[in-house]
Length: 180
Image (cartoon, rainbow, N blue to C red; front, side, top):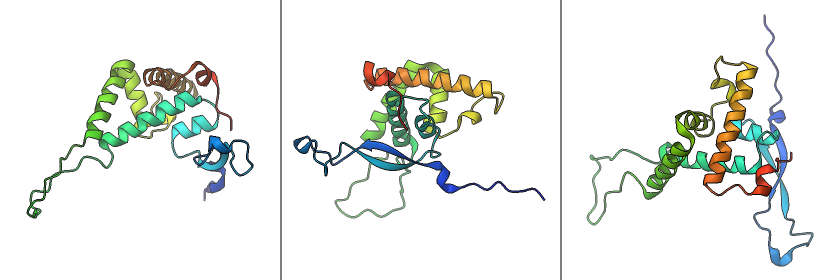
């Protein structure tokens, strides 16, 4: 009988410092008003959070990946739904538009990203950031360390392009790795 690998669920959780959403400049320096607070993050939630927690991508690249993910989810996530023609509408009620303005704007941004990255770059970023694939799942041959390193390098390059396009990269944040 083969042994099952025992995993500790807490190994995938890390404490990181994040911006305090309640921080007030008016009370800067006060003990009760810290600039950063600790937050627990599941680093296995996506490939991007794993790379960010290990310091493999910087803050601008992480922001670009998160923006791409939110646009991707706005386009196909829960958003567009079919029209139910069998449903009875009450007097004065309007039919809802099956495609929202948010989805149209997300599609425009993703189209711009596709033009900026090209087919290969858009494919990689959409698989990793949009669909949530891991690096080893998009490489050929699967699981090859060399292929994973090459895919990670390409992903960083494409995220740099997106960060520059969306104005998320500044010379300071672009070079600064994320601390864990």
